Length: 124
Image: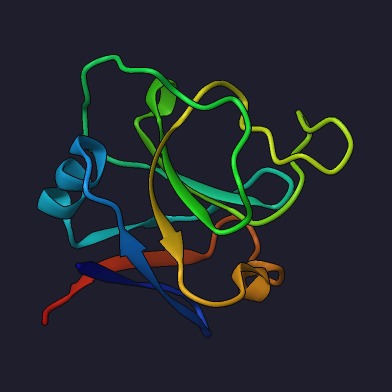
């Protein structure tokens, strides 16, 4: 089981990566450091990770970590986005889900766009 730590200013969370090709590619790219962008209850940032096309999900769950192909972006979802209909959590376009935040993903509520975000491996 692979774990990562996500830090944005004074917010810290851990997450568990799934056993899939997207998680493998993200794991290999770690550590990552960027400026966080907000889009509703989503944080995302561009990466150098490039993946072959695959079946993406149009709706995700709170706490999902996903890769957004058009922006080569690492995404953290915890609530509705501007594309959502009702209570669903809808990315701008289909994403590849590769992990899940451990605990309550609403810890990211106070994060503002432009804040520094780091993602690193938690070695066993």
